[in-house]
Length: 109
Image (tube, rainbow, N blue to C red):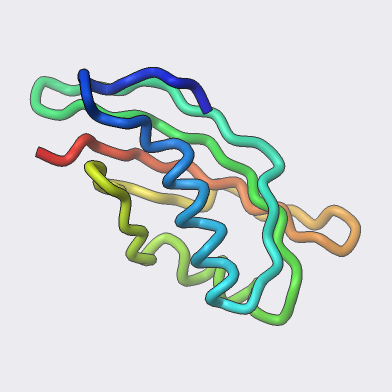
């Protein structure tokens, strides 16, 4: 994750988002690790934030349920809101399931 700032004094949402995803996977009974994570700045006329592309490898009994529930998960982030989260792909690599996630985070007002 880069050290960029959405606005002065507001931390980047990338690392907290990844931590929230890993914690959510653990709560669902999955072992999870980050394969890759990137973010790029995003803005509209009204909002400022970032688009995230994250691949997480999961194993364990809870992997299917976690993948199904993830788009509706409540992922609390300090000073940011997860405005949108989608699963773009799920692929099997050996014993792991690689879950490709696209997310939009917005700076909270």
